[in-house]
Image 1 (cartoon, rainbow, N blue to C red):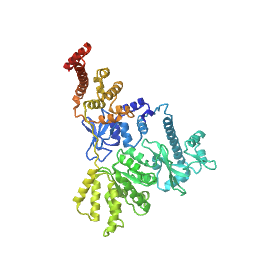
Image 2 (cartoon, helix red, strand yellow):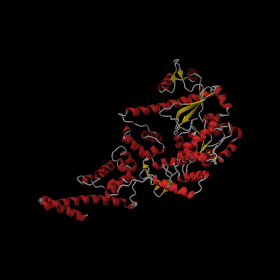
Image 3 (cartoon, helix red, strand yellow):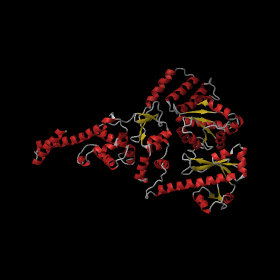
Length: 578
């Protein structure tokens, strides 16, 4: 994968990026000695085991074994592929990716994406301009109670009922129109007329984390169906991943104490207008696991506040089931149950900010909401109902990764259905969980592996090697890998561990490099150089001993030449010095 982007550019990106600073924008790091630590974002971590090294530009979790450089972190934390991770870092540093000429497809895809970003941004500005000069949609928003400040803050726009009217009113150029057609942002209908999929609709631009417009939501103002539509899926817009309003929240609050998830665009806008913080929406669609991952990357608490009708209650229960596998001792969810036929938009206008904030403060905890719902229409005096309850509920409880929360839920369920012996339940749970414990693969520590590991973790040690030629004819297992890495370090004297990992990402030896990059050698920092040089001397010494032993064996069998006898003498002399 990395071959599609020049190595020099990847190295430049890694050189410019401070892994500590970047990770600290996602999760809070605390200084611990010369490194930084926090709870691991990749598993349910009870004590901080996630370590980030500024010196090595490398992260490692002692709990789940997650490790790598800043590119690996983005791939695993943000769920990006390799090229998307490079794009993220390129945007951070204001750089364009110089794809290799032979990789025409990737280069074209990247150029197309940049073109689409530009076109959508321009179109969004036209929509925004149009709403200010078109009375009907403007009055519609006013009637809904939306202020001018919110229209500007959320960049709300309007697409006229026909493209020709829109184009003429805003003086759209033929070139821009042609570009929109080529990128299929607008199209031509069966009557050979240019057609905007959003025409006749209020436009809600959707932004990514870099504040780029990536798509739109549209709401009809004449009640034609469907009421709401979103942009089609593209290489820059995936509905299952996008959260409306999140960009506006994160710009103001780095780590909000919660995110209030509502159903619609106008719900988000109206709550924001009433100074209800942290309101976001999943684009009017059902919540997905990708949405959950995005939400929990930005907060520790999700509060669901769906409409008070039957569809809203169903949506809340679906959200609970999808969120359970992401719950931990630090990540949780709550629920606000609105009165029948109310939604966040209408109720905040009726009640005002203070009363709505009381609803937030009194939001139902996950366990209260869970058991309140599963006990609906259950007759606990009926064994059949108890059996049905346990069959329906246990798979949901078992999906919770947190041991503490899962056991609590099981115990509560057990008491509800009449199992009172908690000790028996705990014994069963312990035995089951023991069966599923992961056994970490260990490889034996040898002097050569320690030597390679020290070099990977401290590439500057390559300066201590007097000459690669000295090891040219030595035959020791693993030496070829050491010399390969040594050569790379000498050719790239500024490399850190993160850059070294990236250099070998697609090479055969990457797996052994990954394993050795996280080894704890139990050597104090001050003694690393001495240990490294001692191991180097040991390799050379072993080679000399092997050559001497071979010559002695030969002497016993067939005798030695004068030159070979002199060689034994020379070897013994060298060994005496060591």
